[in-house]
Length: 223
Image (tube, rainbow, N blue to C red; front, side, top):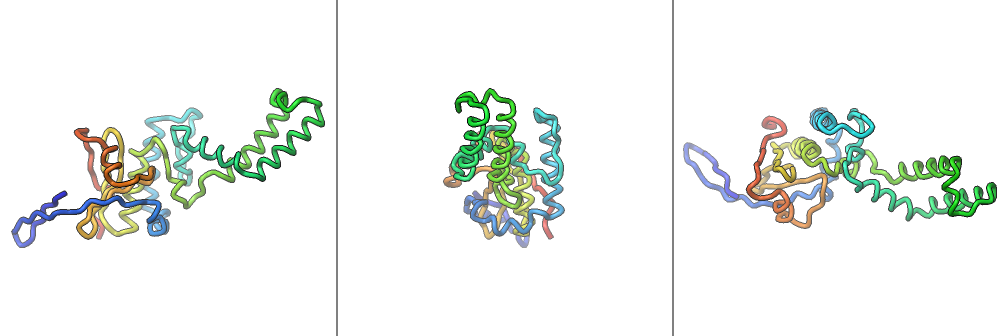
């Protein structure tokens, strides 16, 4: 990529490298700015716009302090959390105890327990307990992994990077995907809080070629 610079009325073309800025590896640099007032304002506005455009099935609107991951429109987190629950030995032990109690109490076979309303209610409470245990925690990168919402959550990514690195970050959006981008030390970086990429080319390929592009700074120039 080339960038045009003007110095002393002389125009010069500067060749810039392009690199992936892996959010996971740099989270320790970004985390202190998660609660920055301006970063939170961008997050709240983006998530509110999402909820207005795509209302949740239960009608819940975004509220400051919510976890963006909870608004994921795919089954990613349900599947990932459920997998962790069923690998949790403590959960399995409690479930086994619960089943034994109900088999002894009712005389039902294990396969028939699910037909009992009270059993289902107790199982639901147990499952919810471990669902919360294995859900993304505030302050982690996973908390902000809003799968299916790249056009909104990566506005937050750009704001976070802008504050943490004290640079001007941009939102780079195509029809297919959105990421954050910025220039530092003659290198163009691309960042995505939502997904992990093997390399930059994989991300750029996913952004698509020949698509309509929207490119704008998330803030004004950082002083």
